[in-house]
Structure formats: C-alpha cells, structure tokens
Length: 128
Image 1: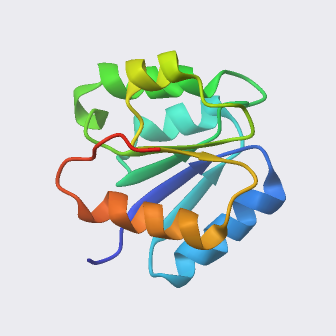
Image 2: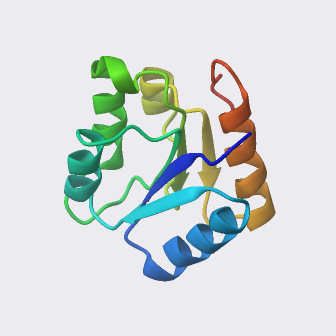
Image 3: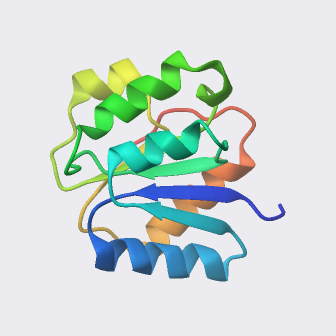
C-alpha cells in the first residue's frame, strides 16, 4: 500500500499521540493538529490520504472542516473518519458523508482497521 499521509485533528493530546504511534508503526506519515485552523492551513499546503476528525475542537466545529472537504475539489475524495464523544448527528452525517463515525472511547484496533480500509478503497462509502 505504501506510505500514506494521515492527519489527526483532535485537541486530546494523549489520544492524538496514541493514534500517531499506532498509525506510524504501520508505516504511515501522521500529522497531528490540535485546532481546526492549523488543520485547514495544512490542507492548502498538502493533501492527506485520510483524515481523523474530532467534532469538538477548541476553535471550530469539526463539521466545518468536513464541509470544506466537500467544497474543495482536491479534497472531495479524501476519506474523513469522524472520532467523537458526541452522539452521531444523523443529519450532519447524511450531509457531509464521512467515511465512518467512531464514537469515543473506541478500540484502537477498530480505528486502525477503519483507517486501513479507508486507504485501500477506490471510492470511500459512508459507514457507521
């Protein structure tokens, strides 16, 4: 599969470091952003292969970032995996069509498997 670029957008530093370690051990290039603004700035510099996105961020709602992906042509096929403590918002999921929605707390093995699946499919499909 090769080295893939994955960004993690989550302000929980312990969880972000754990995700980073797990995905880096699988050979991926992982970048962690603790704010929506930093993640958006990166998206105009480089395109990730997959995104792990928290909804509750200190500076914006994660759904704003998901909306941005749908509006920018070079990002519209990048799979977004929402990781959130919030109950799934079915309206937002239908609107922004994330690849998957994983509720916190979650099993790290499940997360890694979901990321790997998102990277190997030609066209991501929404799943929960």
